[in-house]
Amino acid sequence: MPTTPPPSTEPHARASVVHGFRAAILDLKGEEALTRLAARLPLETRTATIDALLLPFEWVPIPHVIAWHEALWNGMCGADEQELARLVGRSIGLGLGRFKAAFFHAVTADRLVARAHDLWRWQHTHGEVTARVEGGTGVVTLKGHPYVDNPVSRRVTAESYRQIVTIAGARDVHVAWGGTRELTVHLSWR
Image 1 (cartoon, helix red, strand yellow):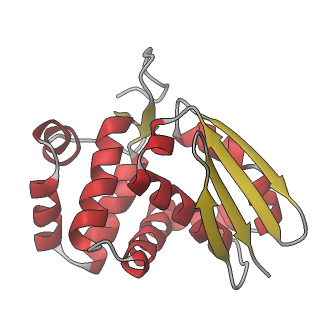
Image 2 (tube, one colour):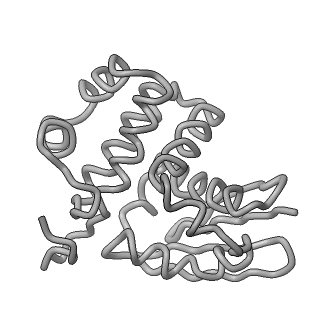
């Protein structure tokens, strides 16, 4: 059960990402929804992330995380942006759990966006993240990661940043994303 990234050239994410989604599904929709989601996952992903004991601090290959993104978007979210926002928000809220108050105490949205690189690196082994912040707006750019090439993962990543800025106390948080060889997430808030 390693807490350090595996010695691999393949990208990984912390299993806490999957744990957050799983907890959100159970909280919002119940056990039956998790069973339906599991049926949408490729066998290898289901075995590694549903059937096996997976601890939050372990590392999961990114193809498994992308499979979760696609199963969530095309399954229980029904390709609906609002449902995805609700699920991602709940996932992040439950994923941070009791650490949320300590983590977000006296941290502003500006500071969180400015630290996007550090937050990304804590959760992911690959990808280059840069951030710019200026007066209630921020731009986070991700390069060199499989999420960039997957439309659903782009959507989930952008929504994750929106939710984190919201949890930090910002109001009226808006997000837009684009880019071709990178994922550029534009955030604005008050």
